[in-house]
Length: 232
Ligand code: IPE
Ligand code: IPE
Ligand code: MG
Image 1 (cartoon, helix red, strand yellow):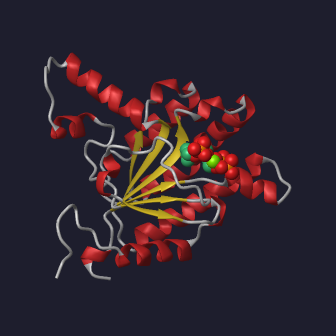
Image 2 (image 1 turned 45 degrees about the vertical axis):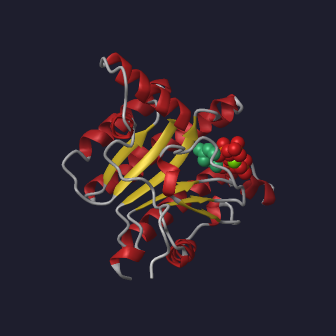
């Protein structure tokens, strides 16, 4: 693949874990567990084709409205993923970022995330960017408030870019949503200005390397014009 056809940044809205489990007459947590396995497959597939940034929406600011036992289960998986998998990614030179307001996360989870941030600080490889208690409106509000408290009375696009959780990442070239739903659910609203949207009917736990290849080939068929005219 030539350079232009490989996206630099791909973002995934994982979805359908619960429905995947339900179809198997299993509890929702079974779907979330398999969702973690899908995450590993997708990260490996993206990294192997040279994608530099992989963003994953793992827990939204709205997901707090789920039953407490599901929230507990999700954070148990997040902590396990950090302690087991992210530690290995750290050893393999991956960079790991988190976006979202981490202050609301359980203390033990925050501690695990801090350890990872420390372990990857000198790494230079593929970036895994995970959204936890992430909501795009909340991110924008936090950004604007931080600009206000730094004394600005007016702001530019680049000021806002620099104050977002994604400040040092380019905008996603592709935003993928699993499970056939066609909405952003408060994900990267600002950063999505010129992203290509790709909706996949498969539930997230069914995502494989082949799904990633399908996404890339769909992306390559798109004509990104950025408000200009089609390339000759
Ligand atoms: C995605 O799967 C995982 C999270 C949002 C944390 P869901 O849990 O939303 O699964 P469905 O959409 O109910 O099937
Ligand atoms: C979006 O999925 C949030 C994450 C993937 C973390 P949801 O399942 O929460 O979204 P809605 O409720 O269907 O819009
Ligand atoms: Mg869902």
